[in-house]
Amino acid sequence: MCLIVGCQPTSRPDLISARIEGPFDDGVGNGDRIILVLDSPVTLNGNPRTGLVFTPAGGVSNRDYVIKAGSTRNVLLVDIESGFDDLVVNGTSSSGPSTSISLDLGSLGLTNDDGTLLSGLIGPVDLEPPPPDPALLIDARWIDSDQSSTVNQEDLLLLRWDQPVQLSDRLRARKLEISKSLVRLTVEGDRLGSASSPAHFLDGPPSRETRILLGSTPQLTVDGVHDPGRSRFEGSPSGIAIGATTILPTDTLVTMQGAGVASPNVIDIEGDCDPWQALPLPAGIPALEGHTLTHLPSGQVLVAGGRLSRPGGRYRVVSDAWILDPQGDHLGPIPMHAPRRGHTATLLPGEDGILDTEDDFVLLMGGRDGSHARNDSEVFLLSAITKEFIPVETESEPTPRFEHTSHQIGDGNSLILVGGRLDDRLNGVIEHLEVHVTKTDEGFEAVATTSPLGQLRFPRHQHASVLFQDSEQPLLLIYGGYGGSLGTPHVPLTAENCRILAAPEAFRI
Image (cartoon, rainbow, N blue to C red; front, side, top):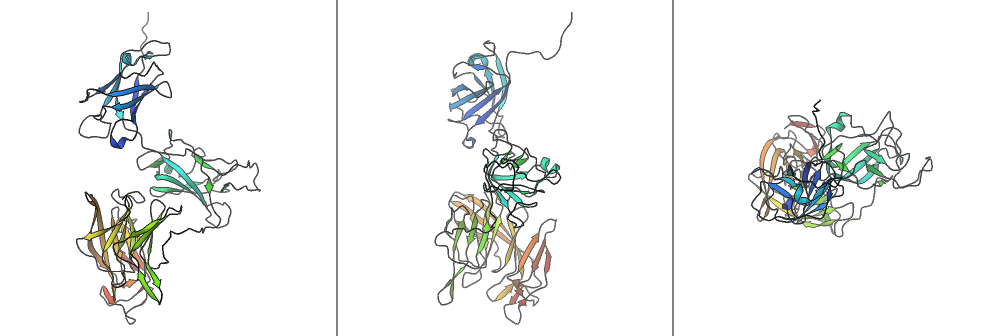
C-alpha cells in the first residue's frame, strides 16, 4: 500500500484574472466590459445574468450585466449595463480596498470538456484596470545623412510613434543593437546592417521619434522604388514593421506609462534624396523677420511675432502667431497679447517635467513692440482646447530686453535670460525666470518669479549662447554679438561704446 502525495488534477477551473475593458476615465458603467480569464476551457450554456460575487459587496442592491463566451474557451465576457458605479479598481484609490470578484459556477451553468456541470465558488481575484495602450508605429523615414542619394552606413532611419517612447534598460544592456525579431523589413533583401556591424538605436530622452543608425552595407527600399541592381527583388512596396502586436507588444521600447510598442500595419519607408521640400503656407501669413520658430511635440512649428516691411521703408511689428503643420493642417492667425520682434520663445515641459509631451507650453519673453523694449511675457498652452496666449503675471518684473537669448534650465519650468537690448542701452543682466501655470474655474493663470543671477562682462545683443546642463553647475557659454563694456550692466548703445565682439564668456549657473 502506498500513498501518493502531490498536485492532483481537478475538474474545476480557477479564476486567474478580472480586467476592465473600456474608457476607464469616467468610471465603470454602461458599455464597459469585464474580461474574466480561467485556467482551463469551459463551455457556457446561454447568457446568464447571475453568478458574479463582489467583495466588498458595496451598497448597490441590483447589478445588471450579461455574461457571454469569449473568443477562446477559457475567457468569459461580462457586458456591464448598470449598478457598477461603486466598484473600486485595483490601484486607483487609496481610500479603501479594491473590489475583488469570485464566480459561482453553479449559477453560471458552466460545463467542462466531458459535459460535467461545474459547481462551487472560485476566486477571488482583484478587479484590474485596462492595460495602458502601446505606442503604435505610424511613420518611417530614411534620412540621407551624407546626401549621396543612396542608402549608406550611418544614414538614419527615423521611426515615429503616436506617443512618446523611451529605450528600455534591457535594450541598453545589449548596446542598443537591433534584433531582426524587433524591426522587420518586408522586402526580401532589405537589411539595416550586417552581422559584423549591425544597426543600433541612438539613445535619447523620451520622444515620439526614435532614431536608428544604419550599420554596414544596409539596403532599404524607399517609397517602393525598385533598385535594378538588386537581386531577388519581388516588386513589393517598401515596408517596415515592429515584431509585435497590440495584444502582445514588445517592451524593448516602452511608453511613459510602461506599455510596449507595436505596429498593427506595415509602414511604408519614406524618403527623399532632396532634403528640401516645399511647404504650402497658410493663407495670410506675411513675410517676417525678427520672429521665432518653436518645434512642438506634435511635429508642428509655432511661428510667433516678428516684423514686416511696409511701403516707404516703414515696418510694422505683428502681434499674431501661426502653427505650421508639415501635413498641411495649419492654424492661425492666433492673437498675441502684444506685438513683439526680437523676443525669445522657449518650450517648457509643463506639469510633468518632461519635454515633448502634451502639457508642454511655449513662453514668449520680451521683444520690441515697435516703440519700446518689453519686459512682459505670455504663454501658449499646447493642451488647451482653445488655442490662445495667456499673459504672465510677475511678482517681480524682469528687465526689458530684445535681441537676447534664453535657455530652459533644470527639470522644471524655468529659464534664464541672457543679454539683449533695452531701448537705447545694452542689457548685461542674466536673469532667472520661473513660471507656474495653474487651471482655475475661469481658465488658466500663469505667474512668474524673477531673480538676477549675475552680469555679463561684455553686455551684448544679437549674440549666440548655449547652456551645458550635464553637471551640478550648468555652464553658460556666450559668443559674439554687438556690445562693449563700461563696467555696468547697461551700456549706452553708441558707436563709441559698442563693437562686434570676439571674446567668449563663460558663466556658471
